[in-house]
Image 1 (cartoon, rainbow, N blue to C red):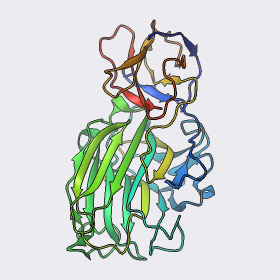
Image 2: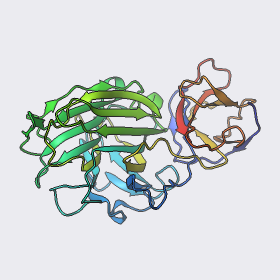
Image 3: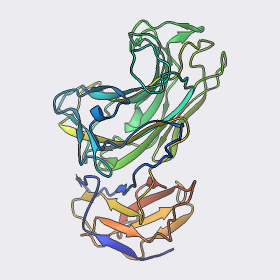
Length: 371
């Protein structure tokens, strides 16, 4: 369907210049996350309208360095966000840690009387335009089983092959007995087998735009290898396992922490930044953020800008396209607004966007999902 669009010369989400001819959707303008006040599926949420110190859910906020992992009032999708500034060669650059459920690791945390055997967490991340390198650590779900943070299992989401994310599960429970002696006890962890994604989120081609990352962990039935670990990037299932023995018959504790991390094993290749926003932990699927209506799409900015074109589909492969720009969009416009009749807000419906420079044969991949 072709419908009129309203063009604008304003950007959102901190648009930046890309090198070469790469063109992507920077973001789709989002509305505030909305969950019913009595929705017990939501364990934690943060749109970073205020610094982490203002959110009681965080047990720890490490900055890495004074300019490292800090709050930025205009660094997010629709306002505040977290900014991680890596200096050249920098390895450790801060983290955010959320505790919940039953835990022996201190008195802080959310819903401390509950046991969580299945959770989803989602965050949006944007790497600076022209980003270089795979920064390794990204996020993890874990079980802390002692006051000194020995771990029962870890569901790592971190840098994998070919600039993609991967899932890399590990357990500190062998034959139903704890074997780890400290936090990150890699020597005693049993590694259960990584699975790699296919979207190169750390490549320069995908830099300068917001990417939706969601992970799912479900613990195994006692004594069975039926645990789950999954990863979605931009609403597409990137990696999945349904055969994991996370903890055998051991059940002293369950899932009780999620960490966002900025640890670069080999050090950053140059001074560069990335941003985080819309962080949610839930016991049910989360999915991409809901778009503000009318839907407003922003593009990345590249050298030698030309007119551009956009298409919207109701599936991640573009089999059901519901909207096309009727004519090339002027190069001076870096956002467009789509008629709501083409992309109505309906429960359970997700849309994906693709973009290209007018006259080019190749489109971007379908990305920037929204509801």
